[in-house]
Length: 148
Image 1 (tube, rainbow, N blue to C red):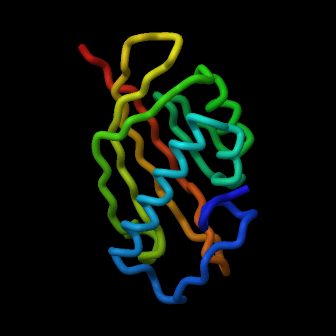
Image 2 (spheres, helix red, strand yellow; image 1 turned 30 degrees about the horizontal axis):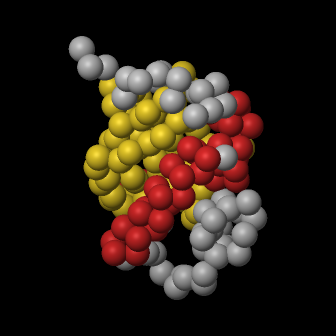
């Protein structure tokens, strides 16, 4: 299931009905990013609840649509992975009437089979589930950054 307002299966804390203020968006983004990478690194299958049938992911140029296809793509990555964030930026998603949140992160990914750390960039558009205080990933862009 979800976590602290992410995904659709666990109840979240009640939130005011008005659009989130920037401080709240920052807090949502920080909690989301912490949950996402901790879950990715430990039990990737649990990420399925963060996506919907309409969610899109671009993974190094390959685009997949829907929670099932996204999870299949994520499971192609070697199982033992560790992410370390180096930066995070948060903005309101202006195309969503102020309801959505854009989150851009950069970091270093360690694949345990390889000793070479890989830099990456990832952008999420988080949207609230209608009528709830749960959030889901509408758009997800992941790109490895070449050292060349």
